Image 1 (tube, rainbow, N blue to C red):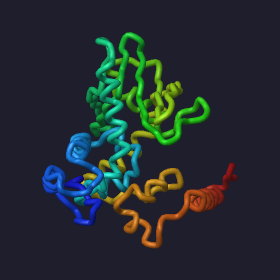
Image 2: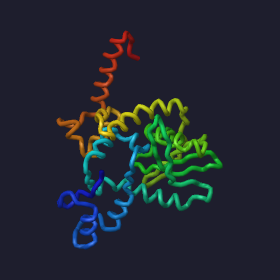
Image 3: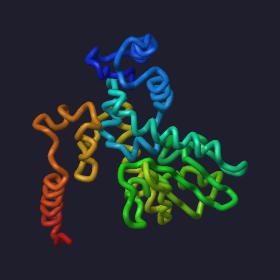
Image 4: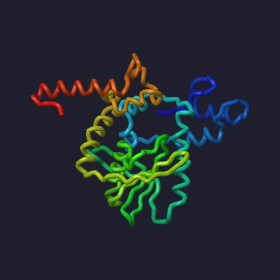
Amino acid sequence: MIRGFRCPLGRGDLLFDECLECAASHENPCQFDYPILTAMQRNIREEAGISVSSLLNCLRKVALEARNDIYLDPSQLYYAFRGQLFHAVIAQAQDGGAVCEEKFERAVAGIVLSGHPDVIYPQHRKLVDYKSTKRIPKDDKPYANHAMQVNLYRYLVAPRYPVDHLEIVYFDMSEVKRVPVKVMSVRQVLGWLVPRLKVLKSALDGGKLPPKAGSEGIWQCNGYCHFTSLCWPGGAPSAPLLKKKEEAKTEVILKRMGRRPK
């Protein structure tokens, strides 16, 4: 659970109240002042249960964060904070028929899943998600995890709002790009969702920790996780190296099954 900030000035781990009291004094040279730190704290969304966002994260990281007290450097929250500012403006500018930032819940395999889609347009059967990113996709294809996210939201809201169209609006400091997302079948969504949901639920209930990040998620182990040294005592491997190991392992399994790798 996130308990506070790790002081950029070397004062160690501070509870939120301690950090904000220091910032309110206006006597320190920290680049993050009181209003920014307060807004960052308010934007931290920690909920009981399992959310769509947590399933898209490294499951092992999510479980470890639930079991340990976490203190974040404010710089780790800056991009999320910047994105939240944009989301707030967008939500205020929607028309009266839009459903914005509403929490939805749905039981899947006996486990409650929650999520907050950015915007739903019921009359148009459309769901839109906004993404602040360093690199806007050059082609018309969304990033894979973002495409999965909006498809999970579509499944989550389906009992109340049927959705036929999905879209992601990417933006950085210089441009905006609207990218349509292919709608996945319910079978495809559940095929991805249910196994991860069960693994994470078991871990959050005190069971076995989920596996370490694979080649597609290893980037999170480089500066985006407090537990990298626990999972990778010798340092996190590169994505290409890990990919080769995964392919070699798959090849061994297929040979044992008498099948040829593709």
